[in-house]
Image (cartoon, rainbow, N blue to C red):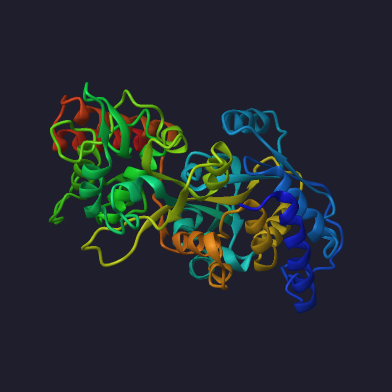
Length: 435
């Protein structure tokens, strides 16, 4: 991955090209790129503050409306509570980065952007402008946030471990994992796993376990929640009347089999370290993480011979599906300058600034037009994975994480059969939604 100093050089070239073409002269409802000052605007978020600083500083040279924009990077572990406390006190930022799975939980913190003010807030225009995974922000009367960037799930694979087992490439379908696990997993004389193939089957020591299982459910044609005929959110983990297959059971069965010692695909157990730590130490062949983790993995072990690849798909699937975290800029309900906040959010999410911002952050833009532009290397792979990403309406990320953990662990410990675990999870999801 590129260092930030290299980013700055690239961004200077990018901005120069955009200025010549006139793309930076973004005509919004308040006028052209040289519009008057809109006052100070503060943004809170968990993404890299240096990247935002570089982009905003360079963009402000072409558009004075960004001259007083400040981005403050927050600790992800305290971000939600700090934001809630600040808004309760009538303070806090004008804009904040809203991750798609918090769209429902944080809706009370937000001033919607009306579709009459911003063209992209129109529901049809929104779908044409932003990726499918950003759909959770859209509504008939306006949007909760303007999508900015996406962080898709990626498959990381250890070249040396695959080569030693006789494999020249990583899996393209999930069906290949069974054979890979049989040839890659190494155990000592006591039967303890020393080299693992894939970290599936558990929850506590599998990074991104909820997101991985969610993606498997979506790939299997299932849903986790849905909007009923009245527009209300409803649980959808269990099969309902008229559905021939149970996608959640199928996905859960596949996921948990890798932690079952009686299966030939047995590759993981709860006694092993965290999956990313195991991968960076060279003891795990496949790691499923986010695009943003690439630089962290490389820096954690510079000698690790790894590469990235697209997320495997089901062999019988008629469309490719992935998961992603999407970040949007949302206007806080306490902002003293909501008009200015909307202007800044729209400028940063425009094609002219979304592209250099995605370069600086090292993850794709959430805009379809930016993702359609030619890219090279990892950027091209990341972009393609963002395009096929899907999401679901999560009523409360922390509580649903507990549901997914209980669903997985009830199967791996033998406390419940697959159908029982899924039905219980569906019931618990309904309780959360009802709250």
